[in-house]
Length: 374
Image 1: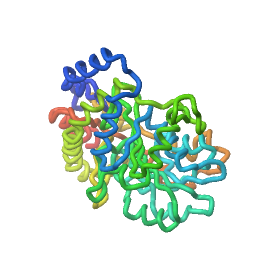
Image 2: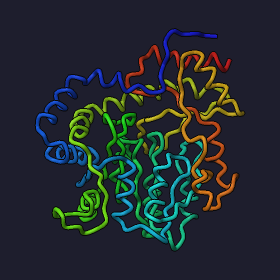
Image 3: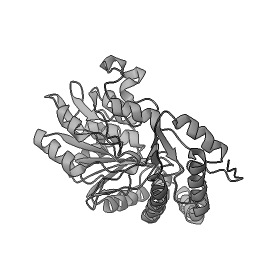
Image 4: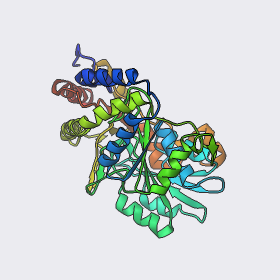
């Protein structure tokens, strides 16, 4: 057995911070000295830059990716009696917001190699009550947005892109978050574009929707103390906006580093029996928020333990799919109803993935996998 003195984390946000520490410190101190901590030119500047980066006319910054999804549903008046189709293989925020607005989440099974939802099943799940579809570009890999938008347009449905794990990814050369009717982003620290705390943003090319979002995120007020709707308090702090402006300048570089790491992993894993490497669709450019393999023959947990013994730390995302969570028991889903998602939950293993992962560390991951499986 190969042993190493190096312990490789599944992700490491501290290394990235050290590379931009001076810029971040100066920007944060400037905000602190300004006395303007909520809203203002720093937040507006970030919104403009992120809109330009994503390729849309409007960006509305908010408190979190979860709030972004919630506000998006509210902006399109989705609520009681409505159905929203999404994936069961994702973080609960995606379905949680559907329930929070009073609508019903409708889960469809996933594709075994991309982990994104199966578009044929999306089409089959549409009913007269369906009002929206939320594609999740999981682990940084794009859903086929050409096919999805065709389905949505045929049925007059709203498409809300969940881009929490896919900032900077694209489909046919167009940035995710600019293809559906609205895009929702998370700036949680471990995301490709991560702040030093919570944060989120919503992108759209519809100025009327953007105007409604700005009212909803400010307690339902357009004019101070004149309330036009029941809103929430969901604002991006100026400190986070200042940090995100700096990080946005480096995002494409960091994403290319992730892609290079994924390419090295691919070269090895595609040759290993019993492991299935994640696949990219033709037309998609992923950004690898996670590099997630499938370990067959019920060996996932054993492999994870062996890798940890060799100093390689991994993550298991979504060990129980959403349709089988206790909170959704009332929806009546049964074990075996969405079999691919259920199988994936028992097989997925995310390898170390962050831009600063060195060649030596990448080799340790690869050689440790080889040692475990030999």
